[in-house]
Length: 444
Ligand SMILES: [Zn+2]
Image (cartoon, rainbow, N blue to C red):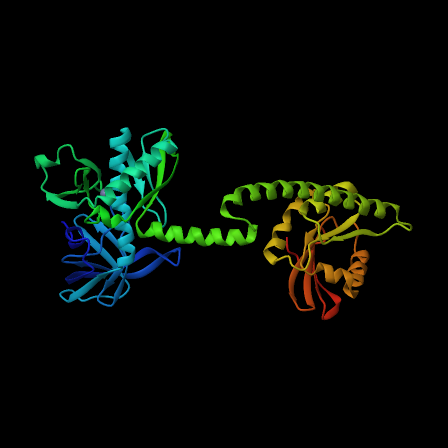
């Protein structure tokens, strides 16, 4: 069946009769997430909502007041997945989400045009293509496409757009001699019945089920952004056509203006400045690592030379990182010593903190657990620090492993769990209840 959207791709509304409506489930993308939704499958006597095919995604729109979340093709029928039920026999108005469809038409016709040009100029055949949300790509059977070739193809495409060559769709029955020699990649594998040929005047004839612009002028312009190595020794040619090209240029200009402010230079210097920044960042990071290593050595040396000897090693370094913690532990190299190493300042966010938990814990060989908290700094500086020290000193120095788990912090109030693996206990400490509240919970 040739649907109304294929006869007239510019139709935005269509009265149609509901043929059937049955309850169904469908996986749809809602707010960027794949979600299984309960709804109804509706078949109409005809539709202007394009079911996906030939590389073109399906349309969105409404049937009556019911939102269409998905349109698929089942044999010769278009199946509309809607949220609300519709009554068979009812005449309803079908409306297409024109913005989405227009973008798809421009990219799809743009693909036909570029495919034809790459074939005519260089003999490269299109093996597949993908219509993406912003930039689409055409896969060609060539190991590479040079910058010059890419630019020449783009120039030719825009020349033809300026000539406003007409684009016509004709419908042919199987066996029609006119079908011989026509590019045939655009049809679904299970296609049966009448075949559409999309012809760009004097350029290309292509069997295709998609919706197309009626004149190349409606493409406005196409940009071939880049050619990059694809799968199986092929090349992907990235392109964008029409309104999406204007949208992309608008976004790019916005980002560029932002970078001008951040980098304090014009677009031509962005690359140079960033290269310079990157080099100086690497130098600073190297210096920082060396300084932190020296700090770690100083902390361990101070611990070793303390008289009388300290019961345990406690280090907090706001500028430290996981590597600093692991360095302290490895320099200490004494299984009989309990060490509590913390890093991080007030501005560290919880997810950053969480990422610190494991690396030093395991790299210390299970002797010591250290981690960062955003409030450790203030905690270690105040009276709670004393309490923590007393508490840890009173405990078995051969704990083996102690985890401090920040539980929450609200203003000056904080709470944490101290988890001792060897004794299988969890101690809950809270700034509002200064006596540690020991919970003997077997947790392993
Ligand atoms: Zn096509």
